[in-house]
Image (tube, rainbow, N blue to C red; front, side):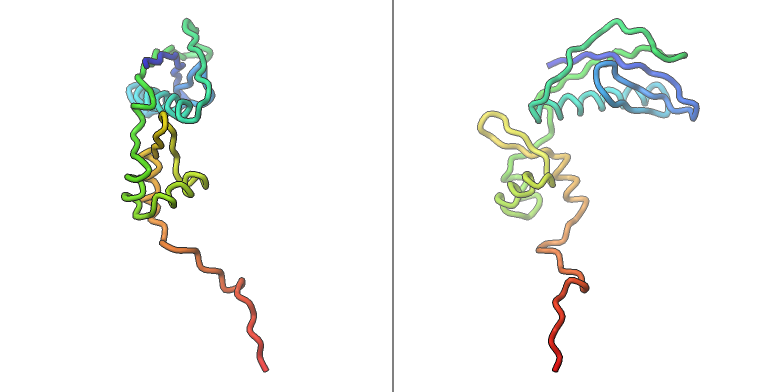
Length: 156
């Protein structure tokens, strides 16, 4: 689905170009107008996909804004987003990529270590969260207890 929203672009004192949407909280920045525009499109796509994955409401776009800040200008951003545009793998594929069982993938989802969503009866894990987990390179097995946690031994 096509989503179209307005952002306000303005230059910050430190030279960054900030981009704030009118219909969402948050925003982004870039070193110049071109980069700020690209970042605004990326930000909007990720925000819409996040809301779709989590069943959250997507605000209705309001258009025709005037800049709120001196030197501000209006940027119209259009992106295509749906659950089909979210880079994702199946739970089985995530397990294989991570070198864990499918049951462990389910545990990781519940613990918030991976992000996923359902589409119909199928479960998917975002590729972003799988890649982030791979970059972390967690050690296999349970964490070892700290030395101060070990029980004292009896001495005679």
